[in-house]
Image (cartoon, rainbow, N blue to C red; front, side, top):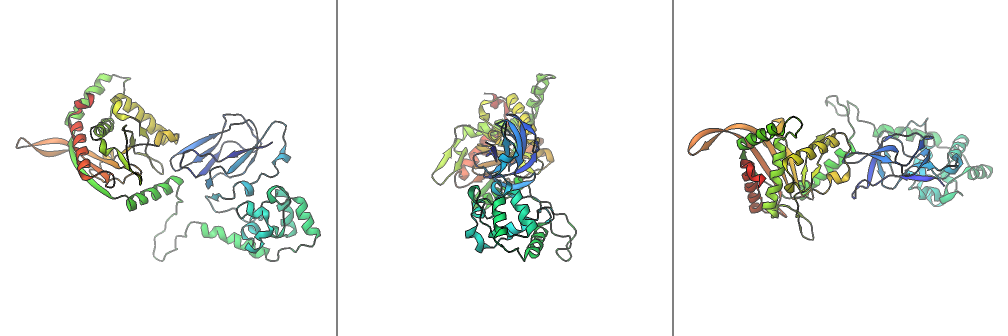
Length: 440
């Protein structure tokens, strides 16, 4: 029998996603392991592989459809020996009724049957087992829809005899023989359906008097989740901030020595690699800072898994360096480069970015001197790194010049108190200013 392809859950918390692209078309042969589609989540774009072989009989969810619920059928694969007649009972009305298209719906001329489905009166629901089974939309075979459209028949008044109350050809023929009335209000319903996309379209440039011209760019799934999560963070997490200035000259000298010694093919360490290592070791020195808040209690983590913010098109993502306190600088450098590359290519898998215990955001490479980052729940802290720059400092009572970097810790006061945060920043500053201590 036909094999439905379901919208996969690409992470434990995923409930919906966007069907970004189809790599196969209806009628194409597929083998187990073939990439058939791309799914866009709030974190990345993931490839969907076929787990069975056969012919891709029907695509149920179009490219660009957003908010497709997990486990919704998105396509159907025909097994060997099956033909298109086996696809009866599989259509978008029964498989993707809950999904919402990213763009306005197609013009009524292309999908005229959508008008009666979308505008069917609520009073007709008891006589429509097909509609209730499909979440409010009428489930009918393509042939039944076409026959009803040509005859001007309102499918909302037809009871289906097919599987799960689906309306089939025989039901339409019986309704027509029984003298069912054509829907008199069809043109008005179609006009209403035609008006609906206009409401969902981008706002016109002159929507507000005096407002300059603009282009409305729809939010990606990632941007929607970023907006929701960070709004929740600022509204529900009591932030406080601690800033220290760290001198970098010893670290820069050590970095130069190590990079010179690594030779042509060796890893080239960045300042960020040292910061990842120092932030992890400081968590081991001050374990009370390596925590997150829950209603049941504080989760005290035993490993320093550092989530590092990486800017990608449309937002940012935080791949995780696991157990960073146990890894050498070369290993951290190699892992970070590989994760950043995967992030920018949209190839991260959930285990690459889930489960960090502490976050790090570095804007120093952009020349930003100081900023305060928003905590990434459920973590309890995030460290914001500014640019290293030469500043005047006082040493032994005399004025001197040093390369100084401002670092600001954002702290969830529910789980980490001020004294603990200050102790952490002292440990971090000590490691940065005495980088040889990271080797111990």
